Length: 138
Image (cartoon, rainbow, N blue to C red; front, side, top):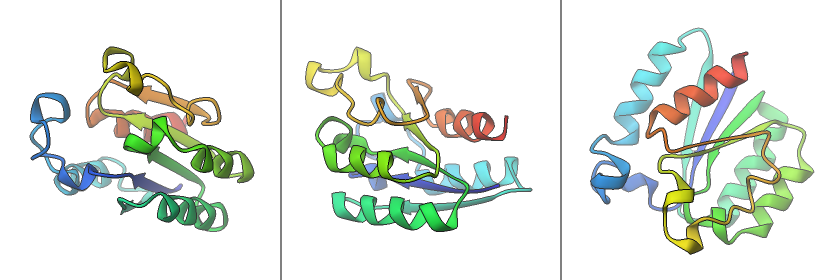
């Protein structure tokens, strides 16, 4: 299976940003472990701080990948455009959040993406990405 992981704004700061919520490991280091665990599959990675770039990658993935694992970060709560894009493509999208949004601030508890994603995983730390790959493979 060919999977694209898309991480949204500020997730390039994992390991530095609020480690009590997001942990101490960078995503790049975690990605090496993830790729090793699923060595028989292609896992590509894209991170951006820009909403339109996420949409561009989702549209690209529709033609080039079997599935997308998306952590839209703060755009989860604000981007109808990302939700509309997910509805418009055929490629399955699994939404992942490192923290449990239901236990965060009130404004973080709304997800425009959950309603259109095939599945949502939250509150599992970085392991949520592994759980998303396993979900896709089953």
